[in-house]
Length: 142
Image (cartoon, rainbow, N blue to C red; front, side, top):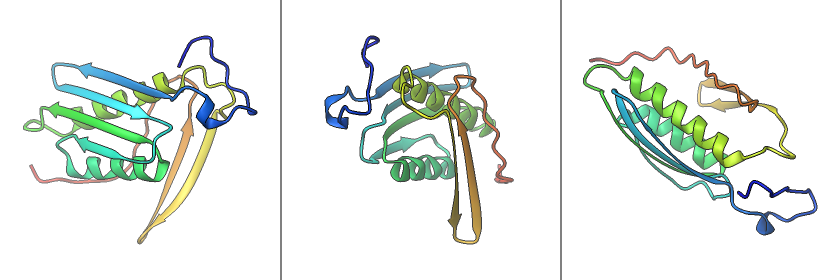
């Protein structure tokens, strides 16, 4: 979006610029590219090398109704940690870039969602102070 653009509630979604971003992140452990369209329909094309992470990002895109393309080549032969962490960081950077000045967006949000026998909770703060606290208790054979 243009730096000078200001969205007002009277504007229709069709009249404002699309909120999109492309982010590349390369470290010693990972090489990631994320493309996001917050005004999309929920299409996803995700390949992180970690099946469960792909599934969770796909579900987030589908139910959040934003388009997401993510590619990651990571050092999975060592551990999943670098890939999972760096994918989340790159995705956060893409959200930050796509949201722009955040005018007319509430800062906080939360949701609970029953998923089979589990109750999931998400709490989001888009204050531009990056942080992630994830408690999944997952164990994977190496």
